[in-house]
Image (cartoon, rainbow, N blue to C red):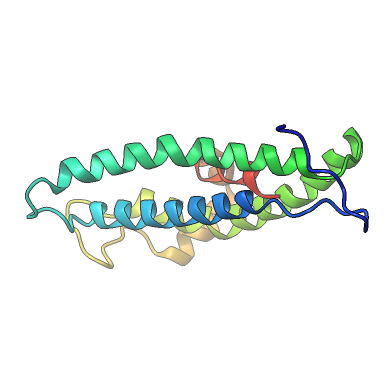
Length: 162
């Protein structure tokens, strides 16, 4: 059936290879999705007939397949793992999720917010920012901007970490 595989003589459950292959497919799907998204943002496909429709269809399809696949993989892997109890499961998950959250929030969000808030869209170019990055970061960390610009949209992947 759909339950966990029986333990072997060594006491370990046998490896479930289809989950490994689903992870491989899901990871490649995420990488390709983001490459296509990035190329779309820089108008790479602008002069290719029919490509805009293809890109929209691909991105929608990838999200419709990829996200459910990640949730299935996460749920199946959790179901196949050894039982630990609620508190121990909570502590392990917190350790695996909170450290990446804090590190990424400190390392990734400030540059992202700087570019989002300070890029001069009227004068597009590589270095057309309205504020000095060092002064902006000092202001970001020492004022309420750290909390005002709080955005968790980029953290969708954390529940899938196991």
